[in-house]
Image 1 (cartoon, rainbow, N blue to C red):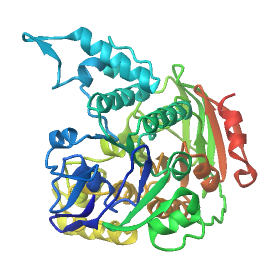
Image 2 (image 1 turned 180 degrees about the vertical axis):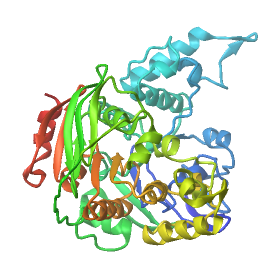
Image 3 (image 1 turned 30 degrees about the horizontal axis):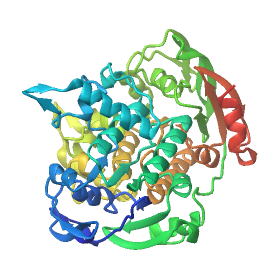
Length: 487
């Protein structure tokens, strides 16, 4: 790709961007949120048409204006949100729209044999007789990869492929990628997890503010240099310094229970403390905070805030009590993507900004403008739809609406998932500021460097129980955490 230009109303998304990927190479495509990565791969995949620029496959120019044209050119894109029909089987999804037939009848046997061949090539086993909604995330990803191989794709784009995988599934993904490399497929790999980039990529291309800022071989650059290339400035540390001053106990959780997902969970959070909670996928972390927030009904347990027992039966009760939750899935549970950022900010705060059933729009605009400035939310105007913001800015909008409620207990569930290193640092600074104000912060994270770098104390969960506590995260290692996580 060379000289790719793309504009949207009010946004110059790509400014003469280019990249190259060779046969059998893994090219990491990196950049902060809003750098242009998603726009570039959507141009390559035919979801957007470039305003100008060239795309060449094996040296020959190709015209890509639709996904079908991209497929015909040998390009396949596996987006972070899979493009599968949940009610169809793996075979039906893989051949959807390109079913082999004879005399008007689909050749099911030919389809199954071809799928078996492709899955054997990448070393994956998938039940071909169940709807894909019954498959694991890793298996659904395998179906997407098989779709690309059926097309004889020469270039495969993988957008955040490991975001929702377990460590074991990530290792299997790496094995699949190496198998694809061995077959001469060029892979463009997008991830915010820099440790992955150094494990799997041969080379990296970095974008910043819609422009191409550099290419490096992975053996020519270290983690610090890569971060500086992405953010355009030296970043002394991935985690801002913390000065922890604890006060009284703010939130007490006693004997929380819901089936086998949450079993007799008890802990407390002090004023000014950041309590980290970690564990493997399925450990019960998210299920625990959903019980605290009233999103699910607890079978047993007591919640006490500032010495007063709470009767929380719904999220509305939790919000009124001063507890807020920034959900793991901000796009589906934290925001209305089709509404403006101002309306998203307003939703939990309408009672404070209404009189006689009418919203005081001037006050609403002014208050939101204050948070746009203080949180440095990059938004062209307050009527911008939430879906059009980068992940980091979406997270800041969610945070703004809860800060306006003046919540006392703030729960972050995977606060930096899908967010670049520059925006991560800003989120970390906000967490520090909240704890410095005396808020009680509960932070769930699967990223061990994050939970070690940001927490004053860490709880580790396994199969619905707390299996250990780390009281001095600064002197602990990732291995210490993992031993408790698999207990």
